[in-house]
Image 1 (spheres, rainbow, N blue to C red):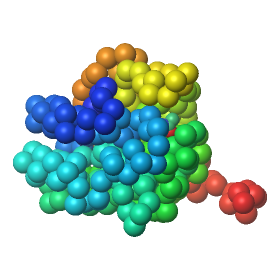
Image 2: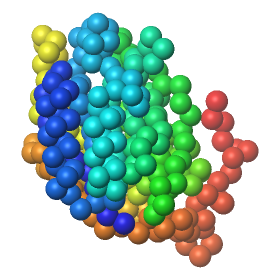
Image 3: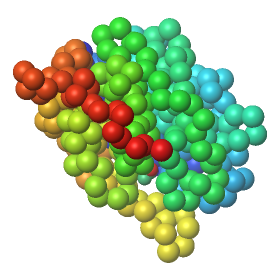
Image 4: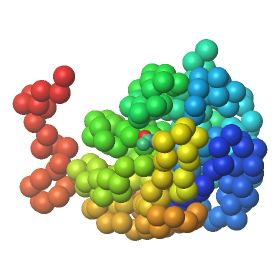
Length: 264
Ligand code: ACM
């Protein structure tokens, strides 16, 4: 299966231009699954709830989903994309899954990062796995990486590939995702952005790039640079993620000792 990410540098607030650029790139790609960054259409650093309100869109009725649905249909592929969602008077940092037949599902970011908490509501969508034919995939967004329960929940439900739209500013995630993959024996596609935003005086955000595709044995198949837009495509066999054995006597899921863990 050809799995891919797009590492982009969105311009804040310019939804049509950001979407157009990504759609053109997708049209040029030979891939079956493409993951885009968090807030790929709006940019990241919102200054007010009013701004969130003016840029958030209905899912799947809004402009961005419609353009992605047309593109997925034409190219016969699946797209995972981070967008700002409007739903019942609230705004969510969401990830949509869109396929050749249209809208498939939405995930709303569970663990909000920093100022996101001021303008967006915490997600209310349980972690869920979707069967897209060649693979079973799950979605989480950026900072969710720091909560191992997110990946674990998807892996325990049978996800082969974790699709991970991101806007990383801390340096740790690209290395940490190797562990997330190893401890769950899953693939992960982290699609990050590059560039900087300083829409709030004194709060300059530099996005670290380094989008990557990692295997269930922790191998980095592709890692992008820290400062350039990039298309990354690799060939993977998603079924590799279904073998949870790490030695002949250790199946990392069957070996779990749930009764001894105090998780709440
Ligand atoms: C992040 O969650 N965007 C760091």
